[in-house]
Image (cartoon, rainbow, N blue to C red; front, side, top):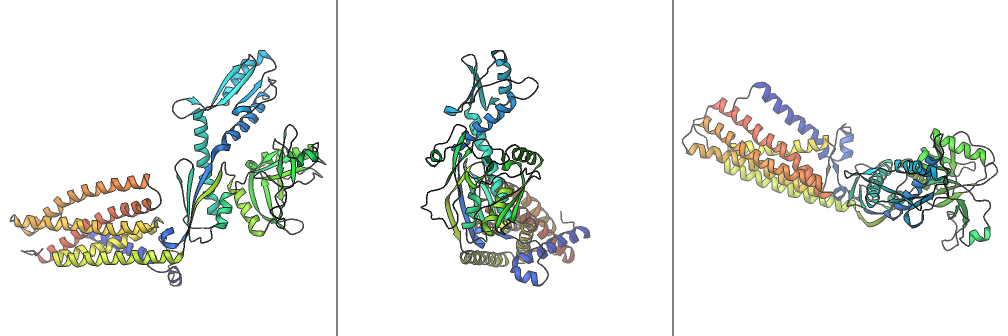
Length: 537
């Protein structure tokens, strides 16, 4: 138990010294570490409550998902019924009352149509329930009704997608260590340290970025369009208002066909560009399938108008003078450089499947973060000094070993957090202080056990060996309970709770190493060198 070969001693000291070296950059300002050549070393990231920044709580409006599902299924059914050598003729598709229904013109093809329709449904979860029910009504009409399980699954997948889209958009801004997590079934928490003005963040996150290209209905009556009445198969959409246009002005309206000839799903890149008049614009590049769709649409509709639509607002409606075959396009509008760049980021990140509203907004100033750091450091220093004095007075030489373990414990925890680019929050500092107490508690158990063995008349070596052996078992069991608690907080908690759990879990492993292994090494070395006949503990 007290046998420490030279290789083990060297390994322990090497681990501790490397930990001290890796912790140093996190203890100094970034400007100073850059000046002395430590700028490339890993550092601990400071959370929102320590560095300041923006906090947003977003809530998704999932009411439009059912309508989107109906639209997708309608397009799928039209395509599938025409697929293959045996085409199935169907009538107009109705989406009234939240259901999709259509009749089969040839009764002999009814069973085949039902099979094709059912093939487009999917099993949801482990129950095997389908996302759509397919029934036959009145002998020739097929009715497809979305199930509640299907709607719930669609909402969950939409929220997963929305969370990833928000993450991509914020990462594209170049911010460091944002916190983006789902809260509940329809909310997303966004925290961006260091960002003091959330206006641009809200504008970027809140943009759905649903890009569509639709043909303009050239046969629509302008008077009917301005009255808001669309011809069958078309819809009325407003133009985006120009920058100098008064907010109270009535929007210009345009009738466009409901079916899109191209959407943002076929987009592979979008970037800030300039149009022929050197005004800010957004250059688009489509994938091969999107390029073919765009080329075919522009070839078939030469001389007609097509509308570029973003989030159900018409950006522009240019005339197709010649086929566009390259798979590229440019979006014109009343853009500034910043707004065009934000739109490009939003389009590259993908469209949001649901609308997001900001229901809670909070900005933490850098001064408040500095005050939090100061308060946390003061609390940590006071706690550490009090513990060091207590251990020194109570246990003498063994108290000195325990205090060395506490000091190295602090440095190694900081080093591990820096290596894993962990984020330190105010609750994390609380976990830090708690870890110091836990580390010292282990040494108290060891020292008291050694005292007890000496009272029983055991020799110095045997007392120390049994003290570490018996106490280590208790320390391991106590740390196991702490570890389970920390894992539960990490998995189920969010925000500050996770920050506390991260520091606590790292501290559990480091404190066991420093409080048990390191102090045992020091004690074994002292006993080997001095061969004491009595210990004062």
